[in-house]
Image (cartoon, rainbow, N blue to C red):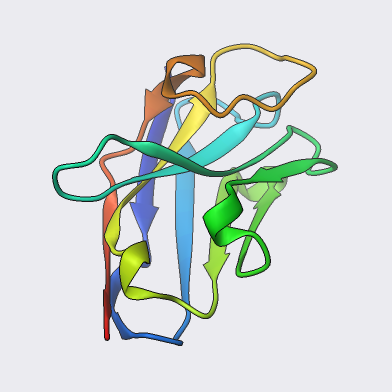
Length: 126
């Protein structure tokens, strides 16, 4: 069992930055691909970014490429999402999650992730 707790969300003006953290407990996450997802009101949860267990490979959704950076430090059992040049359309609840199994291709579907945090709200004002 893995418990995930996100933090770092808040209210920021467009063009600003936030850094989200995801702290894991209960089991080491060093063997898992870790992902960030987001869900805006009235919309489905969508993939944002993911990083393989070693940190050697990453995958980003097109809307955040070049603005967001995912990273991890397995010793600290923590994953981060650095978000720069934020836009109002980035407003959502952001969740971190662990992939249920190792795959060659970094998964982007919510169905491929089995442990989820409670989420942290990010609001970007225009």
